[in-house]
Structure formats: structure tokens, C-alpha cells
Image (spheres, rainbow, N blue to C red):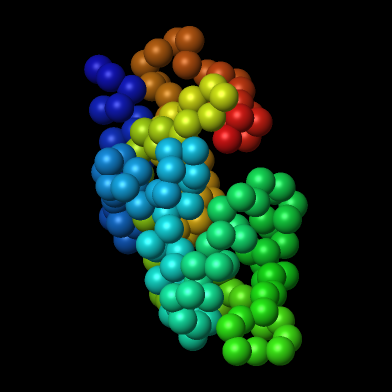
Length: 165
């Protein structure tokens, strides 16, 4: 039996049962500006508009800010509410929510498998979970029947993704 049938598919099915919307790899790719970008742009734009009551132009500008952000600590700060930006027609920065932690039902939850990311060394995480179009969780599934598939191997692959993506 394949790793997909023994590990990836059951994980995707369990997430779907919990309310995560499953996207095909092709659909997830179509929502990205380029294969080396990881944010699902239409999902983020929609969430920014809904959570912050802003127009599409401001949401696009915020997407552009976030699309090139690679520092994990900076991402963490912004995700926790430490992000502000000057919106069109305003004289000062306004706080921008990327995720609604108080009302989780206002967020969107998507998951995809085989999420190919072009980089110096292309990487393909088995499963990626997105909240409001932002990738927050990477899962490297391993077959329980394959003796060489260990937690250490999965951990090393996750470290490669962190380094290369």
C-alpha cells in the first residue's frame, strides 16, 4: 500500500471531517501568484476585507507586504496582531487582523496535499493547512508500514522546507 493511502489520505479525510475545505493541488496552485509563493491570494484578500472592513485595493497592498515576508518571527508577530498599515484615505496606520482568534468561524480553513513550491531546491510537502490563505501547518506523512520512514526523517524534511521555502 502507498504512503498516500496509508497516511496522507486518512489525514486529509480527518481534516475534512473537522471542517477543513480540501483543495486539489491544482486548485491550490491556481490561487498562488507564482509557484514560489505560498499564500493563497484570493483567500487572503477575501479574509482581509471581511475581518478588517477594507477595500480590495488595501487588501492587495497588504498581500504584497506579506507575500515577500520570510522571517518566521516577523510572521508570528503579524499573525498575533502586531501588524498595522496606512490604509487609503487615512492619515495614520490602522491595526490589521490576519486571523480572528476571538471568533474562529470568521476565518477560512483550507488544506491541500502535495503542495509543490518552486525554490532553489523544489519542495513538495505532503499536507499544508491554511488559515485565511496563510500556510500555518506543514505535515510530512509517513507510511506506518515502511520501516525506513521514521519521525526523524519527517522532521528532517520539515527542516528542509523551512530552510528552502
